[in-house]
Image (cartoon, rainbow, N blue to C red; front, top):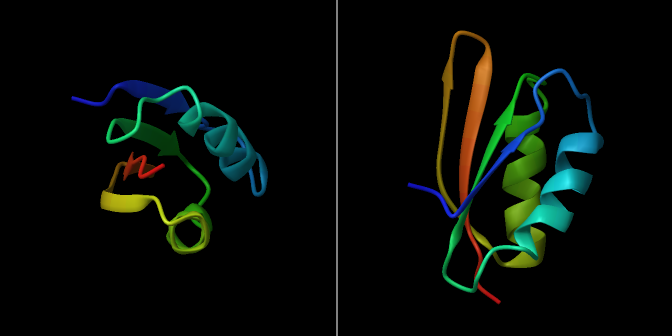
Length: 75
């Protein structure tokens, strides 16, 4: 279970990333942020976000047009 869940369904790039960037700061180090999104571009966006910020993209999945990302805060 994630430490925090962020629902960005209905928002398009770059809003899910911007909201996630703020929300990850509210998660303890080694904690997880779950992000829910409907923008198909979010997959590539969150992969790039994690590469650039060094946070760990633990998993991502898609069901019924909703993309779920689980990100572990590293610092």
